[in-house]
Length: 240
Ligand code: MN
Image 1 (tube, rainbow, N blue to C red):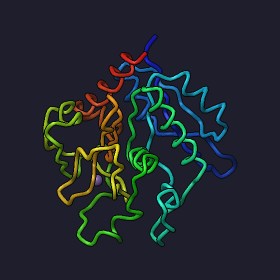
Image 2 (tube, rainbow, N blue to C red; image 1 turned 90 degrees about the horizontal axis):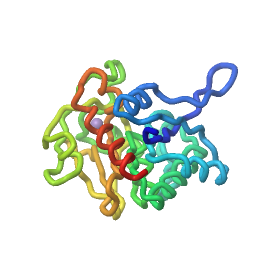
Image 3 (cartoon, helix red, strand yellow; image 1 turned 135 degrees about the vertical axis):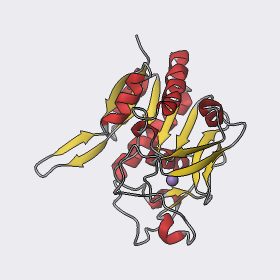
Image 4 (tube, rainbow, N blue to C red; image 1 turned 180 degrees about the vertical axis):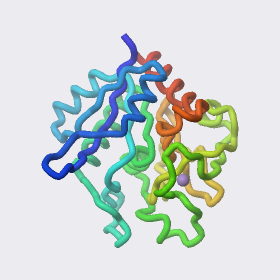
């Protein structure tokens, strides 16, 4: 059996009823790399979440809807904070902690990276555009999701630099929040030219990686981004 990769989802409110949903680009990137995707609907029932963890060989904490609740890092919301959905935070923080304990690989993308940092004791900028006066563009909402947009600088001895085999590359970017204080258990492994944290890696686990951009949207058109999913699935295969 291929490694089973749990992919977190969000609630998409259609006019008549809520859907458990996530971009197909996550599951397609996982399948392309040799993993079997398993979508994980939001739950706050610990028995359900423990079942998820017992099934999966890797955890993909996705991006998408709703900002992480700032109360989780000790702040009240500023007016630029968008919507929060505390149930999703609670679900994903529990899954992150259990997956760490089980020592299975974890990939957190965009909001997923921010969530991991908060779960580990770090904090976020609630809105980089109002909180950092010199910030460059990170949220070109009119652009296609698979368009490369800004540069990132990767730390030379990091896992991401090893995976992508470079220390400087172009990425896409769709975020208005970012990691502020990185949790002690994580190292910063990529920054944009305006110093926004663009990747983090756990200091004591083999593959616990957070990426601020959206590699899942790039794998079809830019094959170099498949390397990240290949490395993640290979690690999940090894952890089986
Ligand atoms: Mn960015």
